[in-house]
Length: 80
Image (cartoon, rainbow, N blue to C red; front, side, top):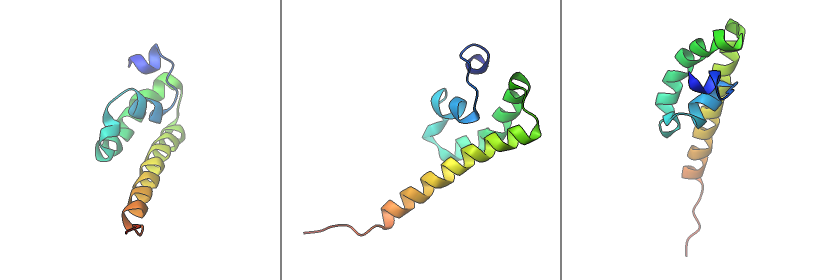
């Protein structure tokens, strides 16, 4: 992967969010997290704990964003 080998991407979210269009779909990003982390691992020296940490980092960000969206949807709207 060019992003890891040549552009020095060092975190899973850097690859998924900034170097692909997967950020357009939270479901696609969530589905890609584990396989992409597994591919990145040997290039970056990650062990299983490192892969798991990177996947958790991405899924937590996705979960946090979903919560913010839900909170915004449920927030009272000012009216006239």
